[in-house]
Length: 302
Image 1 (tube, rainbow, N blue to C red):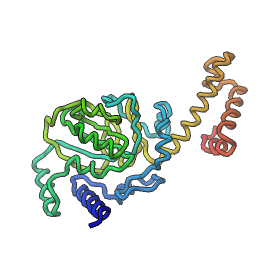
Image 2 (cartoon, rainbow, N blue to C red; image 1 turned 135 degrees about the vertical axis):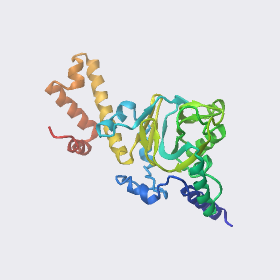
Image 3 (cartoon, rainbow, N blue to C red; image 1 turned 30 degrees about the vertical axis):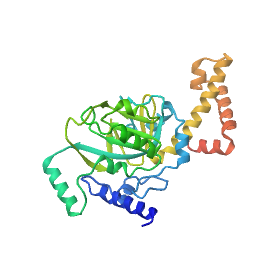
């Protein structure tokens, strides 16, 4: 068998294996629940925000990401993590995995269903890892705290080399000493040398809860020293565009501060009509006439 055909068949097996799980979103359901996505999709239905746009997201600051709240998405930020490499920024598309404590009656039904389909035993972490794509972020609900060391240094290394991005884990990892040697971004709640409770992988490529955020497969993940943002795909371009406006305003405002002629309220609040007009002219010059006119169209009527 030719290598590429073998790889294709292997990936299809992993995909169908991952569909035999307790909680499932079919590609059709994932499309249904992400109807505003304007981009292409992966075969699993996940929105595929373009790589070029992800590059622009890398430059966003926390202040610029706050624009999500103004757009009505007020629960897109999680913090309080331990950070694997604080100087390493995390940007990518969410690929999710959900775990829960093992429950024998549920597990028996689940195992019987998989046997009936000719599939091997229960899903493992590796089942989800085998579906990762370049640019993905492995986002895992591992029940918080230090109950389960969901990955160690070997699986962390696999995530890093496969995705080029990293992970966000609502739970613990193990082998922190080894994992911290990799030049990757990682967010986790604690550490544990193993599992303090038995757990099950109950869903792959399904909505998961990270902090107070519902994360959908395909959300754009942005992590820095302070925490992690999850951007719905249909808002990424708007957030990036508004960030450019903010940077131009900051650039102009600092020029005014350096001049030493104006108070803070006048500069940052644009309370003086002449100064407000000057800023608009500066913005138009920096954006270009066409982009400036598009910007004005999107502003709320006053």
